[in-house]
Length: 280
Image 1 (tube, one colour):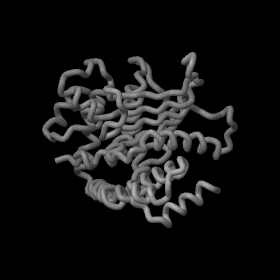
Image 2 (tube, rainbow, N blue to C red):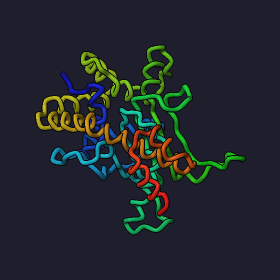
Image 3 (cartoon, rainbow, N blue to C red):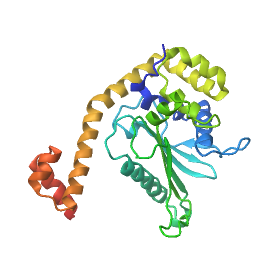
C-alpha cells in the first residue's frame, strides 16, 4: 500500500515535485505547464529547485519546510505548497511568500529592474474563497479601467474540496488540464493508482515516485516523522501564529485589550508584547 493518504499530502507534493532530481523536475515542469495552460507542444523553460527535499534535514518549520521554491528559466520564480489546515490566513500567507521571493532576488545583489515575475501556487485541502470556482488566479490591476499591472505577481489557489465535489457531479470539463493532478493528489483508493497511471504517461511517472516512497524505508520514515510533527507541534504553533495575527489586527482597529484576550485566548502579556511590536 502506498503512503499517499490525505495526511501525507504536504510531504508527497514535496517528495514528488521538490526533490530537485531529473524525474522530479520533469513532473514539476509538467504541472506548471498545466497550471499556466501553456499551449500543447510548448513548454516553460527548465526548472531549478532552490530548496530541494533532503531526508537528512530535520523539520524546523512546520509548514514552510514542505513548500517548493523554484526558478523557471525565462519565466520567473514559483512558490508551490500544499495547505491542509485552514488557519484563516492563506490569502496573507501567499502574499507574504510572494514578497519573500522578491526580497530574496534583491538579497542576491539584483537591481529593481532585474526583478523577475513571482508566482505562488497554493493547493488547499479546504474551501476558502466564496466563489464556486475551484481554481482562482489573482493579479494586480487598475481599479477603474481594469488595466492590468505589469505581470510581476500572480497568486494561484486550487481549492481541492470544491474540485472533488464538482468532479463527483461530472461538472469538470474534459479538457481541464489540472483535473488529472488534483485527482492524483486527492486519491485515497490504492486500487486507482494503476488506473490513473494507464490514462496519462506523466501521471504514470508520478505513480512511480509513489512506488519509490512506499518501498524506500528511509523516505517512508521521514514522511511519517514530518507529518507527525505537522499534526502535533506544527498545527499547534500554526494556530498560535494565527491568533497573534488576529490580535495584531484588533489592536490596529483599537479594540479593548481585555476583549482581545477573551477572543483570541492569548495572555495579557502576549497581547501587550504584540502592542509593543506595533509601536516599533
